[in-house]
Image 1: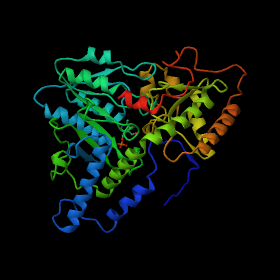
Image 2 (image 1 turned 90 degrees about the vertical axis):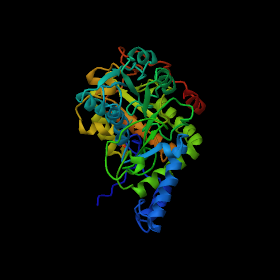
Image 3 (image 1 turned 180 degrees about the vertical axis):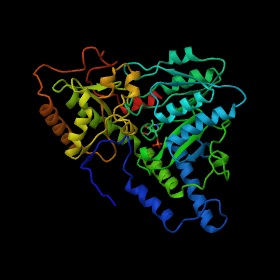
Image 4 (image 1 turned 135 degrees about the vertical axis):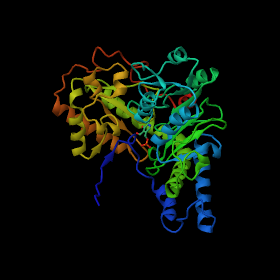
Length: 419
Ligand code: PLP
């Protein structure tokens, strides 16, 4: 077994450490309570009861009803079920789907696969800040549009989309709306009683739960077909014996996220602002990518002017000092040389689109770790690229992000208002 400790972990968008309280809650379901939830004996009934409790906890995180939550094996599978399930439920004629150019591969690759099977896909552009313009969605609607799928928060730049507005446009045209909320889940309040969203994907390992468990919210009355066939678990939408321990962990993680959200958002935004100030106020050549305020709390995407080709070098230097950051997204480690599709869609050239660093703060990061990151990062930058006394910001050809400047982030209530 390889056991390696990381001094300071700043890659919480790739995955989060499992909260010790979650592990404790899961343990009995890896030991003594091992029954199959479909079994009728006491062991089975205990497992079923635990799955039902967890379903309620995940539902409460997004203000849904318990029977609107379908457990899956991942966020990726949840989005596959939403999109492919919708197309299969409309199998009699080709379907038009509107999505964006900045989606995670869970949606992007599913759309490409559906396109090969005859679906029509429209991919909306993003602004320099990484925002989808609702007017573009309204203009892309067609009589055969059956689904709009736009992510709640982007996994590379952290930008929050105007989901309520986009959903309203879809709903007023009688079109279903799916959102990949894998990055956003548990980070700010979401109320599906009022949000015009019909399908929503979540993943446990992004909110301090275990890997290998996800969920799809399916609004009552929304018709999708299963993509995995078998014993009919999860109301027939996702056959397979339930991952009971994982689901229990997901429920516990959702409950903790819900109850600690308000305080945690304030803390993360303060740490994020300290980092942005320290890195992007002009002393260093680093610049912030993505919208200054409409972003996930604690999510920073950086470019380093003149060093975009060396992001991997920076990442490895930081790693050698015990600091874990990302060069874009975990998935990009499969395509080390490929520029980020998200940054390309935001208008970055291929060199810059290959060269971002992502620093994502989480529950277990401390103010001391942030100071250590600032100190080490500054030293590394000065070593790799002697800094001139002139203030360095984004390259001149990059227009300043909307709402630019380095004022403090909006308060947590702004997140609420956003939705
Ligand atoms: N969607 C987004 C926005 C993500 O960031 C990720 C993971 O990075 C996924 C989907 C995939 O989730 P999972 O790892 O649970 O399959």
